[in-house]
Length: 326
Image (cartoon, rainbow, N blue to C red; front, top):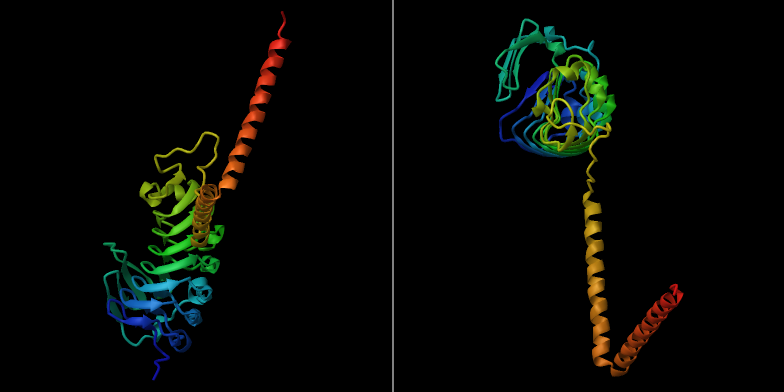
């Protein structure tokens, strides 16, 4: 029996394992809060979760999930449209939940939350709380660009994964974003200037990636003056770090990051070159050792070459002496 009218599925801090069931996205389409954090779930994030149009809180942090973030994450209408809000009048009772990451109270149509270890509680209508937390997993690949279209999203945390590639300038589509954590990944390229246009942004963490170039400034970014935001990016320069950019306004050279296939090809190329050189020397040496006629012919060729070189040098020296004025 499936509870098709279920609004909240909160199973955090347990020992559930295996893959996230695909049927959740297909059968529980009224879900507003879906939390599985701090379990032992593995496998891929099922693309079927994109069918949860009303979803406003997706929390899969601290599991063993692998693979890319599915493009279907851009189908969350509840996070894309600020006017699409959950009607808490449908709830018959008040609600309470507490975990190591956040505490949630629903009381009289408002949601009271304490997130990220903050001491102060915040309250807002339930429809305004929209968050995605996929941190502390093993996700890889690039951040899907569809995620930047979730303009009503307030909190995005995809830190401590293996995500690669660049952060698109399309991030300026997240007009409601207040908290962004991309730290401890393998993201590269320049930090998008579009971040400065996110007026609500007041918490940012881009540390320990492979970002390069000058740190953008202006508007909202000028208010985020904590250098730890950019720590662990060796090729970043400019305010608020103590590393100045070159006077010619060029950015530090971007490191050459090779893929695993490219690294393997490079290693094999050098290895085969060395082996071929060694084999060539051994073959030549073996022939000269065991073939007397070849050895005589080889050294005769060497002697002839030296004779030619010697004669050319002597002729050049004699010509130079004769050309000197008396």
